[in-house]
Amino acid sequence: MTRFRMILAAALLLALPVQAQQLSLGEVSSYLNQLQTAQGGFTQINGDGTLSTGTIYIKRPGRVRFEYAPPERSLVIAGGGQVAIFDPRSNTGPDRYPLNQTPLNIILERNVDLTRARMVTGHVSDGTTTTITAQDPEHPEYGSIQMVFTANPVELRQWIVTDDTGVQTTVILNDLRTGGTIRDILFNIQNEMANWNP
Image (cartoon, rainbow, N blue to C red; front, side, top):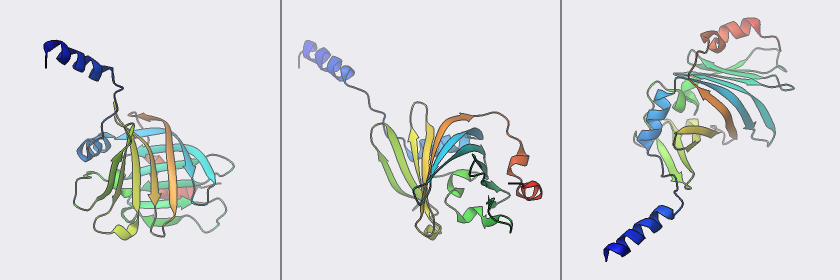
């Protein structure tokens, strides 16, 4: 190949639209481990097709808070190793579950390592986003979480949780701002139970 043709071939390659490369499991694990605090809006697509919106607060490890906007006025808190679901229609207090028995625990763990054997069951890219499906390798019966990331910079955009009954819940994040101070009291289930006034 002549020097001219080499230069021409290189120029043509540079002119092609650049597609975001697929993020590696290591890159995504590092991103999640560096994510200490974040807050922003979310839109939730429920298993029955209904929509909910609200504000999300994340404080890793192990803590997240979903404040649902009116008219729903529900609240979901993960903290102290538990998940509590506050329903304004209930008069028996929140439903509570161990966090480590939910797929959400995968991104809230202190040390996220998606390279663990049998943890990731799907890892694909469409050129714009990277989608990773993960489960607890010791307890796949707890369900799975499908996470969607964009690159440059790496950002978590949405997730789909499939619970142990097969019901899917999609959470689409918007205007997620990382860093900053988030008060620990927001993730205190006992405090919320004492002050819950739907």
